[in-house]
Image (cartoon, rainbow, N blue to C red; front, top):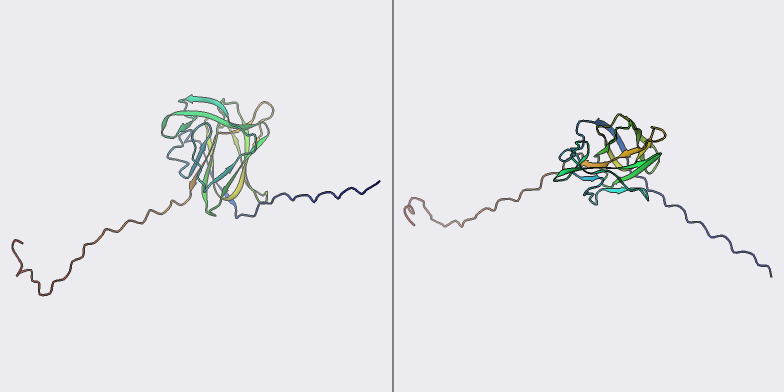
Length: 219
């Protein structure tokens, strides 16, 4: 008996990322701060690799599957290594790729924020890499920066909004890799101060015919 095979199942379409108003404006390459990020960056979210982090629900950070940070030093006082928050210690760690790697960031509040990405060539190998900010919905490259000579540590800083990817591409050839050591996000506009609680006022009943002269003296 010959029967017709069943029709193939209808393929499930790949989920699409809804468009989000996304932008990125380059600010600076900060080589002065080194690993001293506390009180300078990360007032909204901080993610220094190899140490405690704070990423609130207002910030969504997604790494590719299988990406794991790797150590350079788990305890050092080298100023290039990132500070531990509220502790007198530093750690040097990185995510790396011999080709390229990405991280996706989504800021759902539709407001502009400051993003600082810390890049460190710990061994001073002369690494060279390109950083791109890419609209996650359209794939459009919004900004591109090339880094060389970052053995002392450099923060690449942008004003960003929406949903985007940061791509790190190795330009150094065989035997080198693209690396980064932390992400830091700050509100572009500080939140308004809390509304002060009004001081309670005391009320008095007015007594008809009261005279301060007639009622002077001791009570």
